[in-house]
Length: 113
Image (tube, rainbow, N blue to C red; front, top):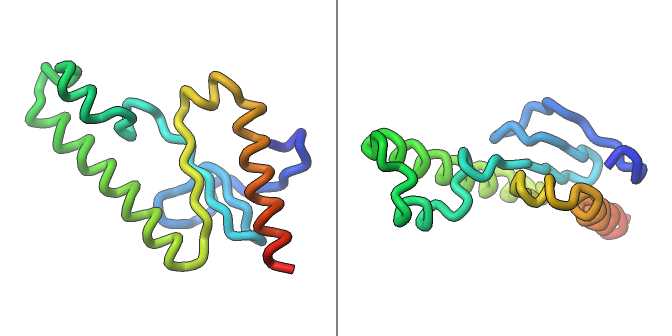
C-alpha cells in the first residue's frame, strides 16, 4: 500500500484494533486470519476441524465472529468504512488487495470534497 502512495496508521486505537487506518477518510482495514476469524466456519465445523475439544473451539470461534461483526457495526455507526480482508487473499495477491484498498480510499476522498 505504501508503494501505491497510501499513507496509513497502524495500531490506531479503534474498536476491533484494525491493522491499517486511514484517518482522514475514516477507512479501517482488518486483515483477518482465515482460521482465527472463522472463514468458512460452518464448513470447518461440518468437516470436523474442531474434533479435538469442540466445547472450547466452537464457542471461541463463534465469539470471535460475533465480536468482528459488532466492531464493524460500531465503526460504521460512527461513519467509518470497514474493509475486512482474509489472509489467504492477501497472500494470493497482495498488489490486487492494495489496489482495492486504494480505490476505496480514493473514492472516500472524492466524496468528502
